[in-house]
Image (tube, rainbow, N blue to C red; front, side, top):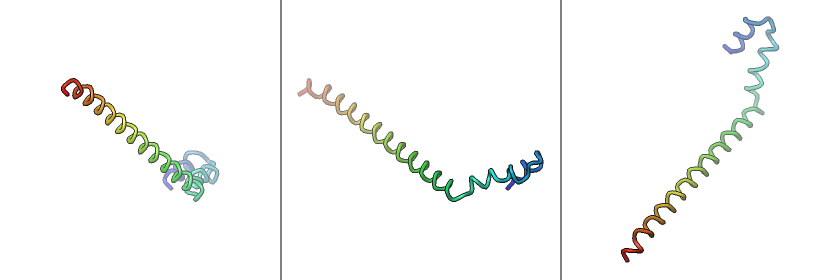
Length: 71
């Protein structure tokens, strides 16, 4: 509402500028936001899993390289 009032007071557009924040409040955009959030969460989880797997592989390789000569 503050954003809406600021636009209305600064420019004489009034309703035209007040319609923009209303678009962001519509249910359709909420669905888009939810989808974006879900996608971001999935990407973050995948990246974390990949990083963990890479670290585990590196540790295993180091252990094998160090342990094999000792055996």
